Length: 412
Image (tube, rainbow, N blue to C red; front, side, top):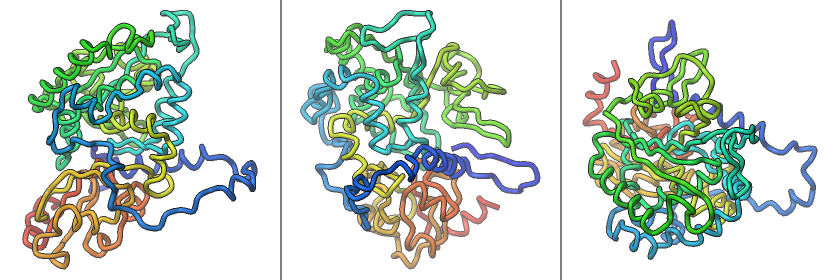
């Protein structure tokens, strides 16, 4: 996440927490007014959970996160990828958008914007240019999906695990997201240093084309969709959403880079959903956000919404590093207590929990939290904003008392 500097302020304002607050306000506004809620619907509402975490294996979306199985098409299909994808596509754009909205999925790249709402911004009326699609999805002009696989935030290592161990989840997700947006193609903007990941991803894309899953008439549905891999050159700004006091530059540097220009933010709107890549409507989203879409469509938005607290639904990949006994990337339920996350999956803090000094919960751009906050805080968007930090990319960086003095020097 990019840091934002304001005049007269001596420290950076956190982008992730700011965008999370904006997303939370939009969620409140988009909810059904209380006056229009029926008493029967209120009575049928399931009671809210009070404990979170300890995700069961059968509920995990990323079943090859640690690379113990074959990442190629055959192995992916044995694990359930590409299952009923044709039926999902034929259900159409509106059905997919409805499931994504029902799921409560919020962007996994840091800002936490509601995905169903964001993808719906691409649904525009036909204006006579281009061609009407065979699946009655109407194009005003070519539309593009851009997947941000730059992952330049220090401490973040989740998207690379998806690309090198579960690439077909991302590819299938691109196709389904493309249908939801009415997109003609997807561009996966991958970090230049991820050489092995780019090779594996390109191999998986080739397999999908060869099997008839991509290209013309995908899976026999009449839908045409292409995926391209674009390798970046290591610029941090190309993977970040920048902002100042007056306006937001939504991944404009990334779009500029794909177009062959210098990776610098554009100076003003229009936003990508209106005029983005190559001057066409574009949505930029995160690898993890796209990769979970097929499972949500197969198992239902209600299933995904059964995890986590209200407005913080689903499962999430957490990258835990620093002064823990066993650093790892793990999929867990949203709203899991931070202390439980570290002790259950990482063997605890080196020297014990009482030896903890502070934790950065979402990558190095979000404010760190002292131990007394970490004792009880939940790992979701709203809880961390309330704790004056942010979920960000869920890159948890743990610092014990033995390394505390180094951090003080870094943040002076």
